[in-house]
Amino acid sequence: MKTTTETVTRIFCELLGVSDDAVKPESQIVADLKADSLDVIELCMGIEDEFDLEITDEDFEKCTTVADVVALVDRLLPTPACARVG
Figure 1 (cartoon, rainbow, N blue to C red):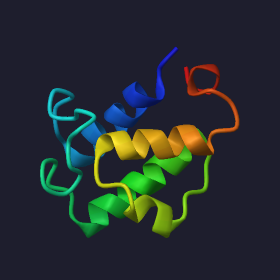
Figure 2 (spheres, helix red, strand yellow):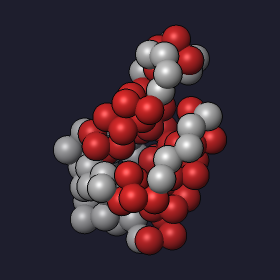
Figure 3 (cartoon, rainbow, N blue to C red):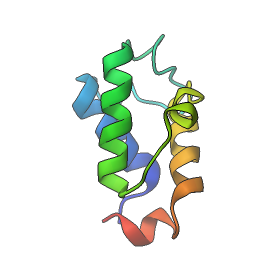
Figure 4 (tube, rainbow, N blue to C red):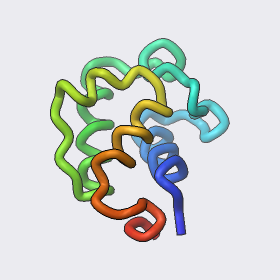
């Protein structure tokens, strides 16, 4: 079973075209991973689809690092990610 971090990393890699080595918990979404405003929207939508969640723009905009996104997903999931994503 995949963890939230593994799944979020995969989404970042697919949508931003970066290697999984580049996507670290401390990676800044804009500064380090070079995401622009459209990329950020696509990341949010991809995460919503993957985890079957609704994330407000306000909540996602507060996320500046990959770890922030993982924490947000974990907070919004009704059950642990390891039980939902696999």
